[in-house]
Image (cartoon, rainbow, N blue to C red; front, side, top):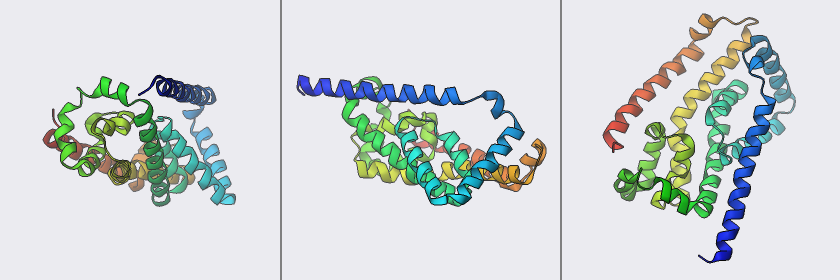
Length: 241
């Protein structure tokens, strides 16, 4: 690698990190924690958003789809957009939008990280995840899909997104494994968001017990804990160090 190429990577890598920091600062400046704990505020904004969605459906879907791509590309946490997607679009359309957009965003991030940060990632993480070498070299598609399914065995989603760089995984296999591997866990969280959305639509006042006992909420919650147990068992069997 020549010196000019290294300088270009450093410049673009720095710009990318500055964009992430700026986005995080902007979003935090918009959030008032007090409002998020007010049921009346949440319900009023929910009705406003859903009314806008009904009147501008295609535009709203496109904007949210593009936002989720950028959110995943810029290392945003998946949980809030999963809940929001189910809350506003319901579980079926919500999971279709979110799994497609976040997979595209994660894949774009993988491409960028592989080009700009490959050396740094190998330096920082190659020893820590060396125990996965024999698994990924056997069949990287199936094992990364399984790795996604169990939530990376506790590995943060952001690290999961660039981890295959260590094993030189192809972009096609990365996309397929991310899409199908993330569906089960993401669908459960989207379903919880959908249940919360239905509860807010039907109730003027908060009733925590009533919310928990709603089948649209407690069934996904049970499924969520069940998948955690399955993930724990599979992690001990297939992904132990």
